[in-house]
Image (tube, rainbow, N blue to C red):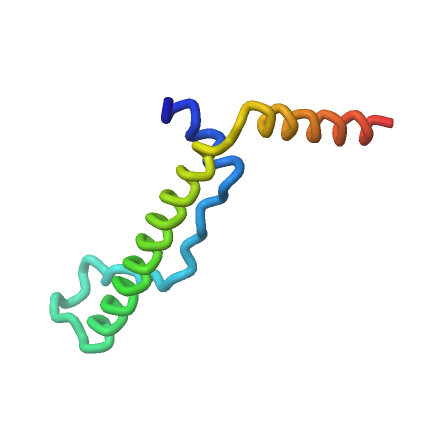
Length: 91
């Protein structure tokens, strides 16, 4: 059943975007010693990623709950609305 609900989940409930920090890795030929600033940057990035993962968990929980509540008529109404919009744009 989940494989049927997944497209609806992704269509009706958008995943949150990641807006945290992303730092590039050090160059392969760079010295192996990590500077204090690189350590701080990495810690900030890890905090941002953890926060985003928590947002994804909340999104998935809420979206799964909402998707489970979707009734057949809701889906049919959504398709009808799109069809009517498309037909109106043709004239």
